[in-house]
Amino acid sequence: MQNEKLSKQHLKQLKQLCNEAGIKLTHQRLEIFKELMAVCDHPSAELIHQRIHKKLPTIAIDTVYRTLATFDELGLVKKLHIMNERTLFDTNVTIHHHFICTHCKKVEDIYWSDFDNSTLPEVVKGMGKVQSRHLEIHGVCNDCLNTNEK
Amino acid sequence: MQNEKLSKQHLKQLKQLCNEAGIKLTHQRLEIFKELMAVCDHPSAELIHQRIHKKLPTIAIDTVYRTLATFDELGLVKKLHIMNERTLFDTNVTIHHHFICTHCKKVEDIYWSDFDNSTLPEVVKGMGKVQSRHLEIHGVCNDCLNTNEK
DNA sequence: GTTAATGCAAACGGTTTGCAGGGGT
DNA sequence: ACCCCTGCAAACCGTTTGCATTAAC
Image (cartoon, each protein chain N blue to C red):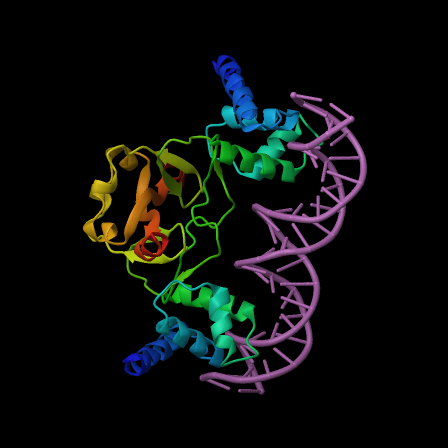
C-alpha cells in the first residue's frame, strides 16, 4: 500500500489549502480528509461519518456535512447529486435528455435521436449491460442570458 | 387550443388504462391526469397539488404523490430525479461521467475525453450557453450480471 | 486571547406511511 | 356491499441551522 506516502503529500496540500483559505485545520477536517483520500468510491456523508466514528467517537454528522461543503468549495471533492432539488415529473415518456438552466432552474427537453450505445466510448461497454442513457446539460438558458446583459 | 380534443382522446386512454390495471378512475386521478396533459414543463408534485387545489380544494399532497407513483407505474409519467438517493461525494474532481448499476446501485466513473460541446447536437447550442455536460449511464454492472446468471 | 469550528438539539422540506372513513365499481 | 382510495396526521430521512462550548491559531 502506498497510502502512507500519498497521505503525507496530500496532508501538506491540505495544510496549504487551509492556510490559503484562512480556515483552521482541525482534527475532524483532517480525519475526514484522510478518509476521503482512502476511499475510491462515491461515499455518502453518512458513510464517512460511520467510518470516522471509530477514530473520533464524538464527531457529529453535521460536522461531516459542513466539512464536506467546505471541501467542495475548496475543490477537494465534488457533490454528486445532479438534481438535488425535488423530484420532477415528466409527461414526456419518450427518450430524451435535459438542459438545465443553472440560473432559473428551468428544464428543457433535448431530443438527440442518434445518440445511442454506439455513440458511447468502448470503456462503457466493458462496464456492463447498458439499459439507458441520460444526458444532463447544465448552462444558462437564452432567457437568462438576455435578461442578464444590460 | 386543441386541448379539448386531445383531452377527450386522452381521457379514453386513461379510462382504458385504469380498467386494464384494475384501478378506479377517481376524481383526483382524473384531475391530476388533466393537469399533467395540460402542462408541457416538468412540474413537481407540489406544483400539481397547488394547481389542482383550485378545482379540488380538499385534495391532499400525499394523494398527488400516490397518484403520480401510480401513473409512473402505468407509464403515463416518468419520475425525473435521476439520482434521488442521498448526495454522494466524489473525490475525483476531474471531468468524468457515471455508470450507475440499477441492481447494486454502484457508481463507476467513466472517462470520455473527446466528449465535448462539439459532440452535442445543434439544438443544444440554441438553448443557451453550455457550462457542463454530465452523462449518466444506467445499466447492470458486470458483477451483478455474473452473480445473477446461474 | 480571538475567532472560527464543533457538538448538540431542534427545525427543515420533501416524501412516505398507518389508519379510519368515504367514494367508485 | 365490497374494497380500493382518499384525507388526515404523524413519521420518516437526509440535510441544515441556531446556539453555547470548545479548540485552533
